[in-house]
Length: 333
Length: 260
Image (cartoon, rainbow over all chains, first blue to last red; front, side):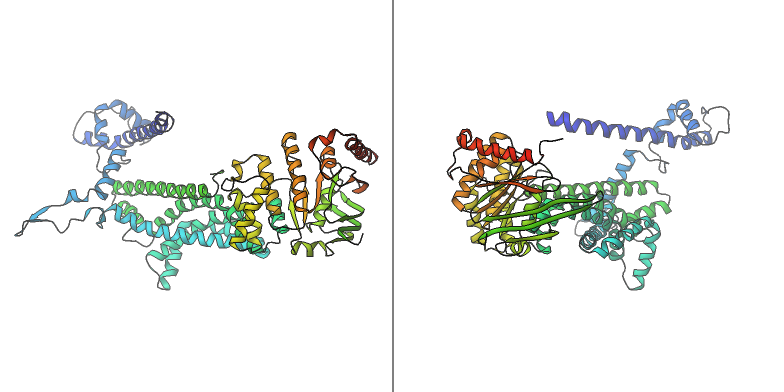
């Protein structure tokens, strides 16, 4: 009961509020098309006077209020300005787990089989889950490379004076360049050396995700205080021992905090990496196709699916964090 | 004093600060023999902690000489001649108590069996048997400080340097730990250097008390304690004890410790 009121209820209330706002937005955004259709069909519609308003917020609100009977139509448009949550949900469901629904059963001599156009559930190449899998592999590879690179740079910065004084500005500068500008260059350069597909996308993910790891780990590796370092000195510990026995374990909470940010932007990087190549698979490809063909639902489906994927990845890192930090004391976890 | 474990001659340490040089230690001459328990007492800034840090090679003196076991402090540090107990327990929160005590042994490359044996003995010695698998935050402040003493003792260095180890603890816990520390000292026969702010603590524990004064940090008085080695807590009400305490207080007063 307490779990219900303390956790589930507030979350549900916020979620319901977001969905309600989204529906309201859809109605307001999509009303103009309904009004135009009705006009063309010769149906009397209420228009805010005077005529000739540009299509801004105020006349849209007025149209909703003046034509309540047109509201249901705003939620079922094929190409809405803003699709409703229900439409997006149906799009995601139909293009991921509902592929079988499109299948036709063909009768053959042996009995029956599914038509050849039909995919095998969500492993079908038409499935959003398949596309998400393509993006996910680049995300995870880039995330892994970003962590390794980030840790190496952080170790360099904390252990080498020259690196400490010279590397950080470059690291920061690398992040001020818009990734949309860098991504095509990385793709082209890597293509020139024969790298295509997964690796270039992962490189873009790495480019984004190493940054929070560097920042977090530099802070983490420097978190041991003077007393702890003096202690190590009294035991005549080597630099290597100070690193493995003190600096490294002390930096774990920082690493996990960085990883939560890194995994989320790693996903963004992989999607961005799929845009300039005209990739044929991946969430980015779906966004592009949806955009090019004016299939707004496809774009929104891919977008929301990617958002859930990102949330799930961050949650997974959070879970790993809780497990690791619980095993090592757990006081601060 | 030729057989001194620790000897300081004309020791001087000047810190260069933004407000000009600060004389942390000036003209410190002292010899400490094997098995002694020497307390350093004085107000903040009198250089008692600095002296301990010089002996531990955590600070470099700017003048004079120090020898630890006939070596320079840094050689002594490399030879792992001392265990150091800091003001804060400084236990690693990600290690259990047993693993914290094991830490210096790991660093010094002891074998697994030897480590297990020493950790068990040390935890027994400081009365923390049964707490091996607890994490530091599950223990009280006093227990944490006992674990840190066990850790300093684990590699069996002949010298124990303690910098206000009980300063942050309440009086009752402190009395208890003082008693235990004396027993430990009697059992192990180590040479102890103990920095404190507390007159009763200094008198109760020590065979010798070094009274220090600030600006510049120097030794005002060195008092040999007439108290027997066997010291129950209520020795602190005896005339001998009070007389020593009085002399310490006189020394502090002479060093202007009670002014401004």
